[in-house]
Length: 442
Ligand code: SAH
Ligand code: F3S
Image (cartoon, rainbow, N blue to C red):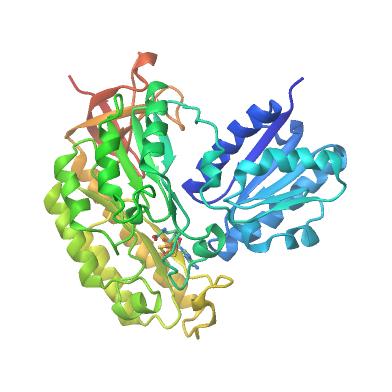
């Protein structure tokens, strides 16, 4: 019987992408089949996130639970990858000696070798180095599951925002050659993918690495992806307000395949806090980009990440954030209380904001964000939208799930199973909490 692999993924979409690629790799190298039952696994991998302290704590709780599985099955191997692995390295084993293997986000391609080595050595296998784009050269062409796929276009981040651990755990920015990205998109399209999301921590600093002097940027890449036969919908995430040039705004007028949704994290609306965060832009510059995007695409939907309770954040600073929320009118967004992270420059800043105030601000912000998202949904009721049917509804297996052209999820009923993967027109009939209800429009 073939060996079984169980992977648990924490954190961002890059981690999800990496986990999928590890499944492909281990299937090729050792015939591993993926299982959803951890009890029957021969190898368990945890792809970790260290963006906030809470995320990091989850890692050790999870490893604690798996320790018991190992007591029952001494042949079980446990590997830890991702950002906690990159940050903590071998020290994870001190706290969790049940771990056999440690690898970073840039060494996932070496996992089969690390696993192989475990057979011949009686100590853990560790590799958290940052080899350049070697990772992509060693990954098999991806499987396609359904009509949507992620394609990683760059790795790491050079921005060093003062609160953020990513540049430390994922290393410096490296873009994949444009040609290679197009090949991957093409191979996915041939397997039935119609909808691709270009992925990276900082996609608008994408530069085709083959062209030395003036590398082609994200807008050019989008233009190329749009020419791949079979690709009908394109998205990207995450972009940064710094380096969001006019070319990226104009491309919305030029390429209708680009969805009418941008996730553009602002973090804070206060210029003082933005400066302390080292975000390299002001509130006004951010709002100007939003204005231009709305002009280029009137139906544009926007979302953001927010951090509240950054050291020194005053009521006035928080109000500036709320002002941005009001002016932009965001769709579904993410908000967090600031959490000091190792190696970051903000970690030593004097924090004067009480926990109570941080919680109150977060609650208030989230309430406003929710009602803003709901009012966007309500405005869609009665309208017909072009939607891509992505699969069966997660909540109700009797219904289907689709994504509207502004990224909203629409649930609808239909008798025809073969509708999955098609573009259809749905009339929006109801705005629910996070989703919309639609009916087939004739
Ligand atoms: N590359 C993205 C963000 C990556 S991290 C960007 O350009 O913004 C995802 C989100 O986690 C961030 O946008 C931020 O809102 C949040 N985050 C990052 N570090 C954090 C910290 N130390 N405390 C709280 N939230 C944090
Ligand atoms: Fe983090 Fe800022 Fe880069 S939030 S991922 S350092 S752009």
